[in-house]
Image (tube, rainbow, N blue to C red):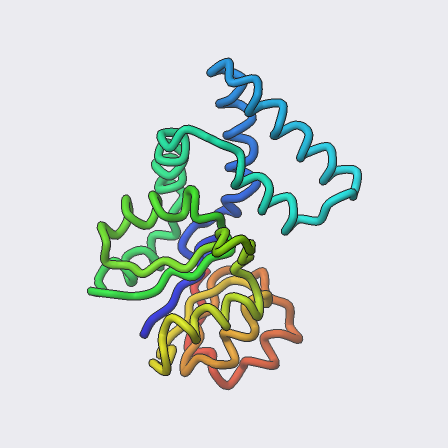
Length: 195
């Protein structure tokens, strides 16, 4: 099974900070002051170091936001594609998009781009627990989802994905963000680099 990361890989940007900015602006211009207040409180707690990134993200996705906002944001994100990666994935009948991005906007984005031909694993609440789909969690979620099916090729841009890279037959590195030490660790699996 072919697997791709989202931010910095399929997309040329890191979507989460853009989503936060979009929600702040959208809540202000839509006069959704309760949403704006909740976003600002979380932002202050994060900036002051009272909560970490994962807790910030887990609380942010609980704020009731109109679904149309996530759809609109996904349309905006669809204009930030790495076209080479998109073209390769778009030729496939099925693949897995495994991302740390919240399911709130990752799901509509996957639908817009691939019309149901992609299986999505994203950060989300499951049974009262927030599953941040990053690093070792991402690989664990993939292993559970794939049920023994081999990861034949994994597209990524970041060493955070090292657990998945080490368990993939081939790795396609996208961009130049990966450190030399991480590249050395997975060098035997790297098939090519896309800039």
